[in-house]
Image 1: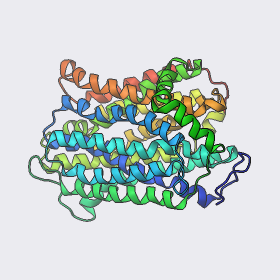
Image 2: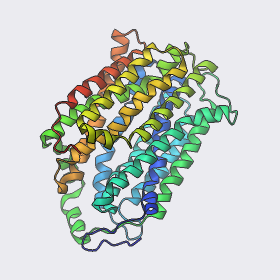
Image 3: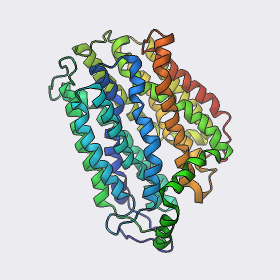
Amino acid sequence: MSTVSIGGIKPRLSFWQIWNMSFGFLGIQFGFALQNANVSRIFETLGASQDELPILWLAAPVTGLAIQPIIGYYSDRTWHKKWGRRRPFFAAGAILASLALFVMPNSTSLWMAALMLWVMDASINVSMEPFRAFVGDMLPNEQRTRGFAMQSIFIGVGAFIASFLPWIFTNVFGLDNTAAEGQIPDTVKWSFYAGGIAYFCAVMWTVLKTEEYPPDDLEKMRRENKEKGIFGGLAASFMGIFKMPKTMVQLAFVQFFSWFALFALWIYTTSAVTSHIYGTEDTTSALYNDGADWVGICFAIYNGIAAIFAFLLPVLAKATSRRVTHMIALLCGAIGLISIFFIKDPDMLLISMIGVGIAWASILAMPYAMLSSILPADKMGYFMGVFNFFIVIPQIIAAGLLGYILKTFLNNESINAMFIGGGSFVIAAILCLFVQDNDKG
C-alpha cells in the first residue's frame, strides 16, 4: 500500500487492506465482551452486594470520559516516521489491556477487581478511540461505508466468540466451573487469558499490516502542537457540548436513554438471571455459575443478532426513515429486556436477546448516520468526539442511581433493573420522533 496521499486524495484500498486495518477491532471486542458479561460475576464472587454493583462499574464510563478526549487529541497530533499516527496508540493499548485481562480474574479482593476494571477499561479506550478516526484517515469517501461495515463485522464476531468462552471452557474443555468462596472459577480465568491473547494478536496484526499516510502539512501540525498544548485542545473539546447543532441535541437525548438501558443490562443481567431464573445467589454453587455462563451465551447471541441485523438497517431506513427505523429497533430492545421478568426457562432468554440485538445494531449505526448528515465536514471528528459524552454520561448516572433505586424502592431485586432498562429504551424510542433528520438515507 502506498504510504502517501497525493494532494490529499487517498487511493482506493483492496478488500484485504480494509480487512487488515479493521482486524484489530476483533481483539478490542474480546476485551469489551468479557468485561460486559463477566465483571459483575467477578464482583459478586468477591463479595459485592447487588446495590454495590453500579458503583463498582462506575470505573468504565468515568475512564472513557477522561481517557477518550485525551487520546483523541494526542492521536490527532502524533506522527512517527515508522509507526504513524494512530498505531502507537493501538499498540500501547493492546499491551496494557492484554496484561489487565490476565490479572483481572486473579483478583483476590473486591478493591483489586475494581482497580483492575479501571486499568482494563482505560487500556481498551487507548486502543479503541483512535480506531474511530482510522477509517477517515485511510479511506476515500466512497469506501468509508465499507470500512465501517468491516469494523461492525469484527465487533459482532469478536463479541460473539468472547461471550461464549466460559461455556466453551466448561463444556468442551471440561474445566471446573465452580470454585471456593471468594475464588474465581477456572472457566472465567481461562476465558480472560484467551481474551488477552486474542486482543494482543488482533490489534498487533493491524499495527504490523497497515501503513499510515503522513499529515498533509506536518510542519503546520507541529507548530500548532507547540502553540495550543494539550490543555487548550482538551478545553475546546469539552466546550463543544455547548455548541451542538439542533439535531445533535435531539439525538443526544436519544443516546442518553439508550445507553442508560444498556448499562442496566450489562450490570444486572448476571444477578437477575441467576436469582430470578436459576433461583440462587450462592456464587460458589454450580447452579449460579451455570447461570452466569448462560448469560455469556445470551450476550453472544445478541451480539450475533446485531452483526446480522446491521445489514438490514439500510433497507429498513430506505423503506421508512432512519429515525423510524431506530425507533422500531429501540422498541424491540425494550420488549427484549422487559420480557426477561416473565421468563422461567433459561432457553427462552435467547428470544429476549433477539430484541436486544436488534436495538444494539441500530444504536451502533443509526444515530451516527443521522448525525453525520448535518455536521460540517471540517468539524466531523470534533463533534463526533463531543457526541461520545452522551454514551458516557448516562452510564455514570446509571451507576449512581440504579443501586439506590433498587435498594430503596424495589426490594433490591436485580430483575427490576430489566424493567428500568426497558422503560429507558421506550423513552429513547419516543424521543426519536422529535429528531430532525435531514436525509432519509
